[in-house]
Image (cartoon, rainbow, N blue to C red; front, top):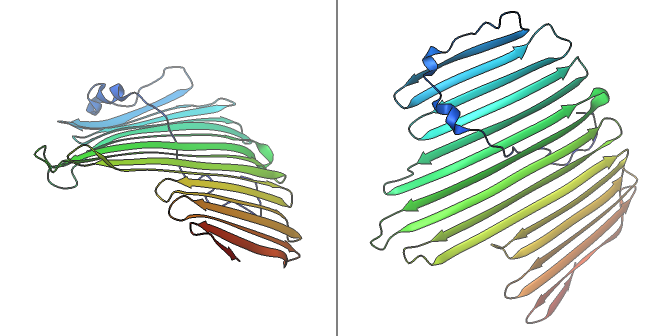
Length: 289
């Protein structure tokens, strides 16, 4: 990536969603794999792995050689009694200055955290990137995960829960000129007990976008949570160490209902405006500061 003096916290923090065929996990005994000659083709293929009972571990790599542009592809597969997974990466290099890559992962798992409890889950991730001369590149990463569990017996102490979440991050780096970064994550959690009544349902969303253009930095971030019944916003704009402005708001729906706001501006590091207020009710109250 290009060099910058400012980076938004959480820059491409997480991983991403993509599918890969699980049927490949069952494609023959891996213990028979070996390097395969490609004749006169400018390709190298390497395969190795092992298998026994319901366990499989397999790797495969294919790469070009003696060409102006190089390409490589890697595949890793695993299978056990409680998990199945596959990971793929593809890499294309156009000499020294240019590179493009992509990859995806898939994992299915089953666990028993305690007696009479079963949890099943699925995770998918994907990543893409392009790197160009002069420190210019673009990256994208995301992950989707889901888990559901069941504990107890149908005699009355049955409990269950489900969680679904997704995270993503995208970035464009323009070298010395600037950069733009976007992050987001969403999650949903639900639980019920033996009567099948929903006892808990929560959702959370967080999004942020930031950008740097020369000495100017901008950021906008929002979050919403049904668990806290709160919406939040934060924004800021700054020009090096010359001037900066920041504003934030928060609203909570409950008893009481509250809303707060704060604004701060600075010039050469000295505060010019720094005030805020909070309103709540019922009963109605107003609090400065």
